[in-house]
Image (cartoon, rainbow, N blue to C red; front, side, top):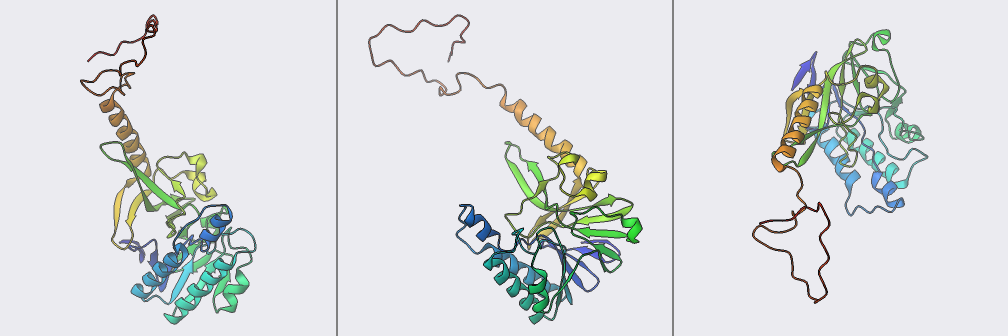
Length: 292
């Protein structure tokens, strides 16, 4: 799906621009970090993320894989699984004929030497790609001072929440496309299923993670919901989806009505009989009586 100036959204958590595939927030090695916290995940999540990114890279035939920050997950020196996955990703991209360029994010401590030893490149950002500046998004930047017509960023891990007719919430990863600081801004979703991030139509401006987005808010941004490997669907602005979510909740609440104190008694049923012959407890004054 073409946005402008050659910037395209793909049916992957990725965009294409010039000769590059743009992704953000892979958080490779997240399972091992969770395992150390007592959370066990019985499958190879980071491997799936890596294979999905390389699959999109192969489909596009891009010459560069540009990662807009947070290649790995652990904030510290890193875990063994992180380095193994980073190695597999960089070497896999090289086998496809693409260079890996990492724009450093707040989770990318200590990883630069490993990426560079494998033939990749690490930059502090912003990185110019096809007339856009690629940043991670954890630091505030002035796009006009940088001379950027547009920004491509990660960090926020945007998702959007919808409510169906019975009140069930459905959350989708999404791209955000709008304007902040005098520049057009594309916010990329994370390809990592565990990096759910920010449900943008449920939180207030002050709860956004990126200072770039907190400055202006995102209610005017267009939301493009993602069904990985299937489609990208333009929905509406964040503000419109915020209003739709609120109305959906009100509608469900109206249909359900107030909760009855007799809700646990099935229709046509009755309260269970007492099994003892003790005197019944007097009914309190004002207590609501359940009637058929």
